[in-house]
Image (cartoon, rainbow, N blue to C red; front, side, top):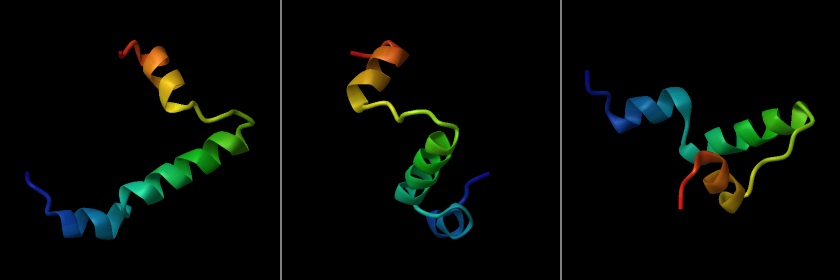
Length: 46
């Protein structure tokens, strides 16, 4: 099923909103957000 971008954004917001919420939740758990380089290392990416 294909969902149009407008419907998706209306329900979930834009990517920046998701990232900001995720950062807030991570900090609420007393953790630190990984830097891009740390995330690549954790995921085994180059």
